[in-house]
Image (cartoon, rainbow, N blue to C red; front, side, top):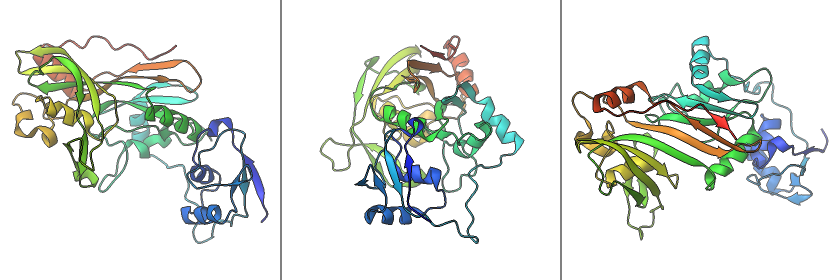
Length: 326
């Protein structure tokens, strides 16, 4: 074993150092990596670094002697073998695919990532989208289990890091459609209501918070009423300006118009006889800078239960524009 170096490629732009090592040395534990950083064995362009250091193309990473994987603890194969049913299912969600990104229309009820008691989720199905020896696709962001609609996936770690940075900024435009109980007053505007999270895990609850609360996080959303039915139901277009957990669901409750089929934030008021008892929230439109240049815009068709409700209320969604890059 000897000291070597690796040069950061364009595809690895903005990737964290620990993820860079995980890509090249998947058997190296996080603890061992952090110790190597702490003792100065790993360096970037000759300088000390932390495990969370962000890398840029052209930087040279000093690689100390890395022990080989133990024979009794073989490296876990990154590729997960999926049965044909799951491969077909994930491929049916694809509405756009190119050399750098994949855009999915996720169905309601399918979690984006795993957790306690969750055996099937989008993340574990991503191996069904890669071709040959290319890297495993990576999720760029998440949407709630019961929210349907657009989900962006990167074909490589470098592209994922670049797009995740865009999502953290103001370069990504997201529009959601929701069917709510009641009609907001005013019919459009901005909701500026800080939120706080109570508890952890799947049972965590997000609540409105006062601006002076220690746990309060700024949360803003734009909304407009697209159509309404006898003041009893409304079709809203919602645009989150921040990215808090359950933000749109709580903000609709703050408006006095909880989302149809959302018992967590609407209680009994959102269970209406004759309408599907499922969350009526859909990630409809996504606009973002394409990693290869230009802008990407995609729209996702609403799920079957929302189509049923639209028909019952006389709402007309219209045709779905095809994805386009400009």
